[in-house]
Image 1 (cartoon, rainbow, N blue to C red):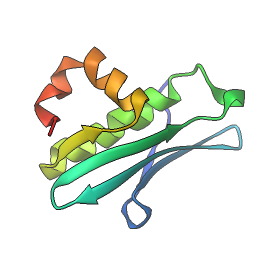
Image 2 (image 1 turned 60 degrees about the horizontal axis):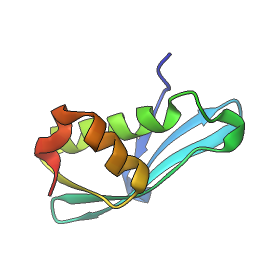
Image 3 (image 1 turned 180 degrees about the horizontal axis):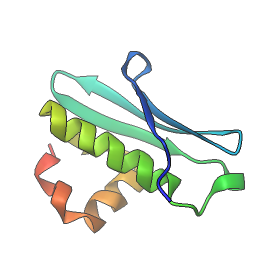
Image 4 (image 1 turned 90 degrees about the vertical axis):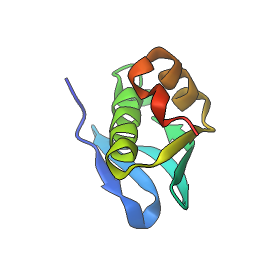
Length: 91
């Protein structure tokens, strides 16, 4: 199952609500570089691939916008290592 993820560029955040819990991926955008600063999924809904869905949507958005990515968040860095199709996005 894929989580429905919403991008809120005015808050520099991707969000998903799962079973009443807010899951987020926060980023900073400077010029054309997205720095992923935090991925947060509450323990109550952890282990369902929600962080992966948030990260995938963020990276797909960066790719579509022509942005480079800095994975400052440890989860995002690990995700990028496991998914070589996104290596070209690295700043």
